[in-house]
Length: 140
Image (cartoon, rainbow, N blue to C red; front, side, top):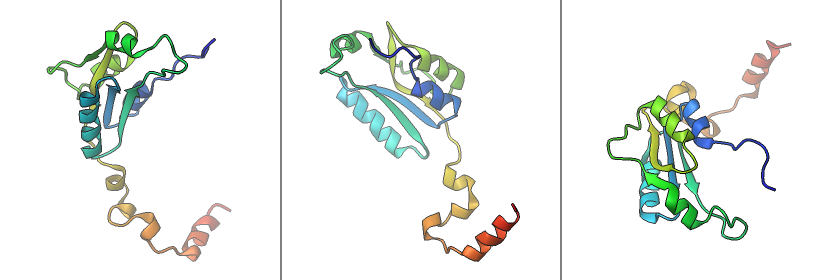
């Protein structure tokens, strides 16, 4: 019978949360998908790629052919820095499904936003239990 609840849209959620790299690819277009993965890996910050991969065992409706008829590459003049347009594209589903970099922006990474981990990860820093105890005492 399938899922009765609303579909979860990871791209729309990522754009709403201002994720700095959001893309969608199709496993039926390996070269395009490979380019997206390379771009995501080289992106400075969090990157999300939604990869459309048909289930050949259980889904006899959304086949490779079904996706091939619907997916289209975003045009060269598409501006992935336009967050409003990106959100619209993330909601596009059905007869036409966009693939490519849907949203991209430059912003500080988590490490750049938290000074204590900017130069040294937490796991490599000295741990002083007494300091933590004194901080926790403020909550009693």
